[in-house]
Length: 383
Image (cartoon, rainbow, N blue to C red):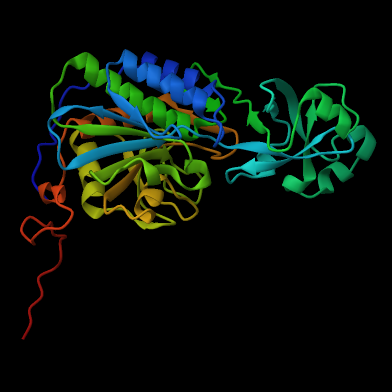
């Protein structure tokens, strides 16, 4: 791996821009498969920042911060899509059976306010409730009923006593259901909201781009900003790379929990998730940047987790990948992070973008041994 100066350099991140952008992103419903509005919003923001970009057919965004060199290609990626639900059945009691979009528990859906987007272009409001939702009616059965998507329903805020009433309202099987975020920024910097995964990562990417644009810093090497739209259902970055990106840093949430080593107030660098270890050299570069710039970080392993990096590799892309995270408590539920975590992560992204590829030889799909990196091993005496 080539040597690179990772010493301290001044990077000014606008915290007001970061948190303001997060709030705007959070308020745009974008469950996987219903992401057109947020794609338009991010595209307009990139245009405002004078960052050129292209779209795939379905709306994944490939932007680029131009540098003096273009190869080997580098990228950072975050997903625009969130968890949600879809209408599965119009029930005879005038309520909706729903199926989850993405992998999340109905335990976290109970009590959520939602918007149903009908095929006719209308919306109706509602609430996800357990089948037995009244303590006065069911008493102790409230606490003993099972947990699962078969045991919840959407009570729409319309006069609907049967399936025909729902049809008259315009609701159909297959309509998308978006869950209200209930965003709250506390005076002490805590942010509580649904869908921090991964609107917070997108906000960090845009804030890093905004800081670099305002600084006028000339990049040594181009860096792609990739925004995917199907990460929560598994395909993520599989269609956005086009073969010319050699290394990619994925941005997502850390798994803050007593059994984990993640930080809620700082950066978490994931060494391995359920898809396997991340690239040794790219991960070490990120660790070096944290150390050199005194960024607060921790290392962790995520056993029940996958990100955009996995879908990129599984699609056949021969790229180096790494995963850096902002802290999130209660992931895939009612989530919480802290401004400091987002701020530190945004600084790390800016430092990374200002650098260069870790292995110059990576400009070639196939090449000679010369320039291939090494990993430390103890000296072994044979004989």
